Structures are given as structure tokens and as C-alpha cells.
Image 1 (cartoon, rainbow, N blue to C red):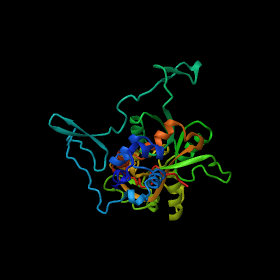
Image 2: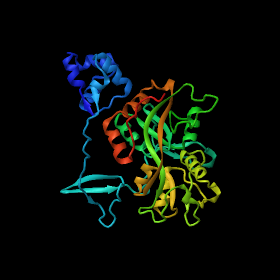
Image 3: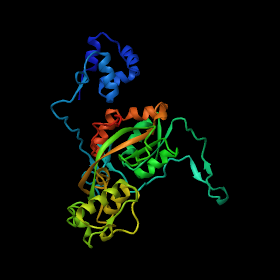
Length: 356
């Protein structure tokens, strides 16, 4: 991305502080945009272009040459069990060694928590706390996208703690509608119906990603599309009712002329993309429908079926809450976008922009 903001601002004789005040931003944000560390959304870009009497294309343009991929050599922490191709990892410098560490298949440590549910049955719904709970800069976000954890990590650096609740799109929207969460992560149409339940709410795009069939590396069962799921030698794992993955499965089976009952499935559905992908990686199932990021997480082969948009839905009245403002500002940070592209394989060209 070519960025001429600093060049044009200085040519107009406008100080960063003056431009920030006119655009309703902070001076630090202007400097971050000029440095390429912050990607402005459409509304901000239009405001800046208007103030500087130029066009958005004059300020920002896509380079003709594709950006060169960043690479680094590493030594596997365990040479006998190296990371699988496509599997997320972290690299840590230890003395003269660059050590690559893949994430654990299961949580290896206790999660950060405020306390525990009171074990005394007489006090249901009461918590035993380890200390006072600070809620001022907390946001409760429910959704199913595996990459929401990346958003939460970047938001924490910006001073906002995102509490993630796993829920499929339909459940997340219902939680938002009943006022139990701040933000719902959903696929388009998950909460919309003829009664217009989207009234009073705003949608911001998080990313666009692919859903498809995830199979073990090398595709040992030779699965090509949904029609192969009728093979009694193939074990499938369903997602929970109301999930986008389950709706996609039903659509693909109907297109292939196959009934859901003809698919040999595990007795219990998976409640998340990662749980479904893990069932395949562990050998409990031969195939599932999941997001491409979940397949990458466990080094699975992926057969795309559809492109999906994933949005963050919030009540319009909550858009002015400082933690919510910060959360959506984080979507425009270059490092988060790069991680979503590289680690999750997402299209972030519309990330951070309002959805009509």
C-alpha cells in the first residue's frame, strides 16, 4: 500500500495536530497512518482526503508489485515432531537459536480467570473471586471465528480486554438481541428476519474467509465434494444446529441430492470450528466443514466450498462507548491485518468498514 499522507499534508502546510483535530482523530493516529502502522477505514480516508483537498486514491493506493512475503528460518523445538505445513507457530530467540514452537493441540495451562463458580450447590450462579473485577475496559464478544483471538490480543495491547464467548452465529445474535453481550460475531443474515430485528444495530466487517471440507493431510479417503459423504466408509462430524457450517452442509447435500440421514456422522456434533477440525486431525472423523483457519491450525488439507463474510454486530447506541470505539479502531491496524492474512488466510480488504 502506497501512502502519501505525510507528503501531501506537509505540502499543504498542515501540522499533524491540526489535521488530527479537523479529522476527529488523535495526533498519534495521524502519525501511525503516515508510518503505515494503522490502516484507516473508508470513512476516515474520505475525511482526510476532503480536508487535504485530494482524493482517497491520491492518499492511498495499492502498489503494482505484490508485497514480498516475510520469511524466517527456525529450528523445531521438537525435531521429531516439527510443525505441519500451514500450522501456526511462534519463533523465539534462545541464545544463537531461532526456535519455532507450534501451539498445543489442547490448552496446556489454566486460563486467566476472575475466580470460580461457587462449588456450594446452595449458591448457584455465585462466583468465588480471586480479587476485585475491573469491568470498565472489558467487552464481551460472542462468535465462532477462530481468529477472534487475534483481535482480542491486539485489543488488549490497546487497553481493551475482550472476553470471548464461543457461540455460533444464530446464538451470538440472540445474545446481542437480549442484551447479554456487547458484540456478536455473525455471518450475514444470522439474525435478520421479516420482523427487522437488525433495526438499531450496526455491522462492521471483520474479514472474509472460506468454509469448506477439512480432511487429513494427503486426503486418504479421496474426498472431493459433499457427494462423497454418502460413502458409508467415511465418518463425518457435524456442527451444532444454527451454525453457518451446518447450514452450508445442508445446502451442499441438497445440491448433491443426498439426505442428511445418509451421512455417517459421529453421535455428537462439534460446537466450534476448531473442535470439528480437531476431530479430523485426531482420527475420530474423516471430514468436517470448517473455516480455512481451523484447517490450517491442525495442518489439514482444505477443499473450499464457499466464501463467507464475517461481521461484528453492535447496538448503534454502543458505538460511542470508548472500549467499542477502540475495538473497531484495532481492526485497522496493519499488524493485525497482516496476521489475519498470513495466519488465518483471510481477506481483510473490507475489514473495519461498515456493512450497508
